[in-house]
Length: 270
Image 1 (tube, one colour):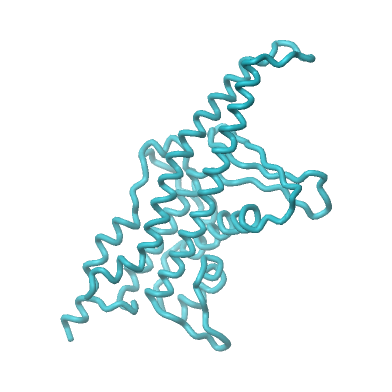
Image 2 (image 1 turned 135 degrees about the horizontal axis):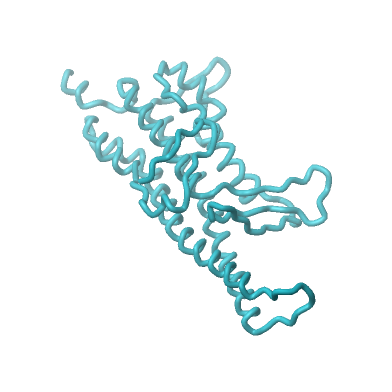
């Protein structure tokens, strides 16, 4: 894989479509395999991560499909550009123009489906990772009420006090990763996909030098307070997720002795 520059922990990492050619390894699957044997019940640890593993696989599948449809879409746009008349003015649409326009619309729909699907399942993955940490390290009752980690949003809100009161060693960049993914994935999924209320929303497609397409949201007849939106590049989001999962793995490895799950070594000592 290409060597990448060091990225600030609170920014989406630089990761291009070309990096997808090298493929992603399912790091959750690898971790389950290496970690499970450290517990008295080798199935207990892995079972707690099965949901996260499932949705991580979904994201890998979506990325492959996205890259394929992204390349087809951009090739078609280039073909359309070549057919533009040399001079400005009114021109008649040819049958070829009509076919390209129809195909462009079809590819756009599929492309947007893959992008929004990535956000949907990435949110589910993050929620399952939060619930895993809650099960792995146990409940926490604060001074006023029980802290819940039922979602990534809850994790972002309560993780500092939860980790502190549990006495856990916190990996460098963990908090930044939690906040970054909440802002870049959870908020977009909630505001622009699952709970979008306005019927005046329009969605277009944009791309730059990286050639990774993104959804751009606008508003018909905009009013005061209406906002535009744009998705992040999917390869970069996936890399941000990978960085976060690696920090979760580091959190577990550094605090294994504080887990609610019974370790094999402790059982043998008893």
